[in-house]
Amino acid sequence: MSSSGFASAVMNPISEAMSAGRGLLELRDFAKNAEAVKHTADLLKALAQVQVELINKDTEIRDLKELLKLKGEMKFEKVYFYKITAEGKEGPFCPNCWSGSGKVVHLHPAGPLWWDCLTCNVKICEDREESDRRKSEINRRYQTTWFD
Ligand SMILES: [Zn+2]
Image (cartoon, rainbow, N blue to C red):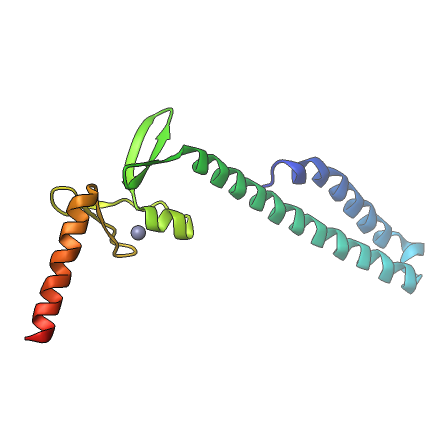
């Protein structure tokens, strides 16, 4: 398991402390004192837990930095998101998935002006009038079918 950032800065002192503790346990006279052995073993266990926690925190910090970078790259345009980086523009991505769960999900073309998200099943129209027209058409069909 590798570490970076804060964890790597304190990992060497922790490793040195663990090495010193193991050295104490190996001393013949020290090993005769059961209480000293128990406290040293507890200390080693606590240091190992600190190491694991530091690595977890570094992973969390790295993930949050990536999310922060991604949030800076995601730009809303018309009705969907694009990811804009030094390499270029990527997308469009689903605004429902990005806003709701922070997932970057490609939209799939579904005809002129229309896009589908295969993850959340949202249908997105680039044109507000077309979208309203389609919705009212569906409402009319639904009512006609329903009341016939
Ligand atoms: Zn979606």
